[in-house]
Amino acid sequence: MKFGLNAPNFGKTFGDPLLAVEMIEEAEKAGWDGFFLWDHLFPDDPAAIIDPFVALAAAAIKTKKILLGTAVTPVTRRRPWKLASECVTLDHLSNGRVVLGIGLGIPHELQLMNEETKPKIQARMVTEQIDILNGLWSGEDFSFEGEFYKLDKVKMLPKPVQQPRIKLWGAGTWPNKGPFKRAVNLDGIVPLQAGFEKPLSLEELKQISEYLNLQGEISDTYDIVRFYFNTGEDVQQELDKLKLFRDIGITWWLDTVSDWTGDTDKIREIIRKGPPKL
Image 1 (cartoon, rainbow, N blue to C red):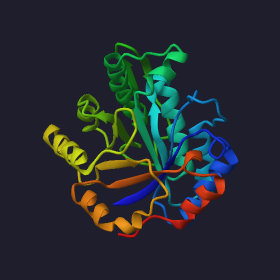
Image 2 (cartoon, rainbow, N blue to C red):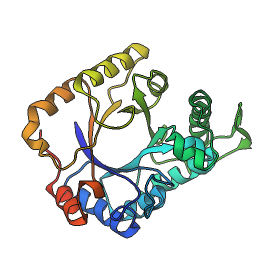
Image 3 (tube, rainbow, N blue to C red):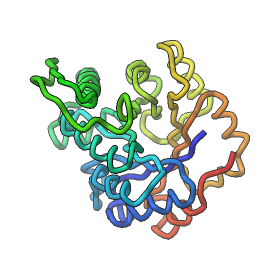
């Protein structure tokens, strides 16, 4: 099991791009395996906000090992070719340390931008976007004509450092099965609970793992992520719990650090403490 941190891309601490990059540097020094930024434009409470891809690009230059990504990007409000280019650039800056988290986004936030909010339509848009990302990242001539997007014969270079593509993690709220069925063809899944009020339980994650295996062949490198909201608790004291999650196939444990877990000094303390040791 690997251990990472995730943070909103807004607020006093992570709404400051220089401070956000500094925190990611601290995380690498402390031994965390990954750092993931959320991807919002208009949080519920007005706050300073940063672009996650720009911040991660800066962090890529300052770090050597830590995995960098979004958890998660609402891709339906992004043009797939622009997203493809941003990710390739970040992949080269980091020498292949990028994960793109793919989700539908928060409906009330998307409504502010007059973006699509109907889940069934969004799901079809996401499917097309994944096909386009894969096609553009191939570095070969690529054309596409779908319900929402069209590309005439194009070639995007350079190819990503990662092959055959940049790592893609899907996201979905359990027990909504659609995102999990789609994620079988990706490189991992970030399961969430509707309302985001608490992390999914061991039993729920076990159901998800079993469901994914029923949908298709899951590779040995496939990631199932536990997205955890209660950073600051001493997880090191709960090693038996961590082992139970590992034994059902959880490969990543992500803790949240944010202004609501404490001030900047408290966040830095949590980061410097480093991940639990299994």
